[in-house]
Length: 274
Image 1 (spheres, rainbow, N blue to C red):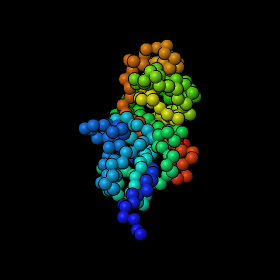
Image 2: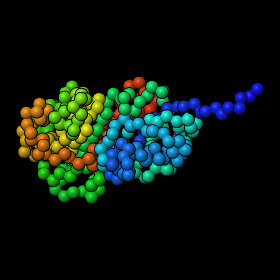
Image 3: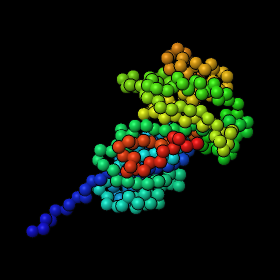
Image 4: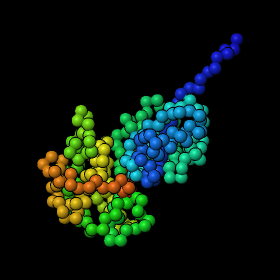
């Protein structure tokens, strides 16, 4: 005899690779009464499936920051193919957020916890007259910067270090130790007036990149010595408190790495590109 019970759809986990221009959003993480990237993604998925799925992100990007390769995941009972999920969500999403691809992933996948590395770029338009085309995505700095001095200072940011002194309100009961793989300063080959600061780590503290780069910019201006970064991390100076945190608009999440799952996500690796 055929069972009369309604069989619930099996739950599955889907990962999305997402790009966005974050100017209009109060960061990635869901907040009440303000637009966020997480909120828009959840709203679009709800319109597609009728489900209220919770989206988990690889990185909680700051208010006004951007991404060309954010990774998120969610659990759903919907049976739509992944190509349909990506296309339909883009239909419902605002034009400054796009799902680049969707993929089925194992239940063990976690967008944040499974990631072993995150790559960011901070972009500075270093020219006397601001560019109207870069005003949403680059920090504008009219003072010429000494890139050699900035590069030398980045050596103090590499390796396994405690970044508590450079983070914003990091909880006292949580570790502030992170492993930094890369912190490079270079001029863009196609636009020498644009400076790119590329950094990669297993994770970053709140405002860590923007505050560290603020010290580097002051070093580049000649206002601080090269050892100011090392002094700040060691708590030997209060100078950081007098330096404004660089604006979020110059920050972009470029890549997230998953050694166990990259073959499923086909996540593009941007950390070696120009």
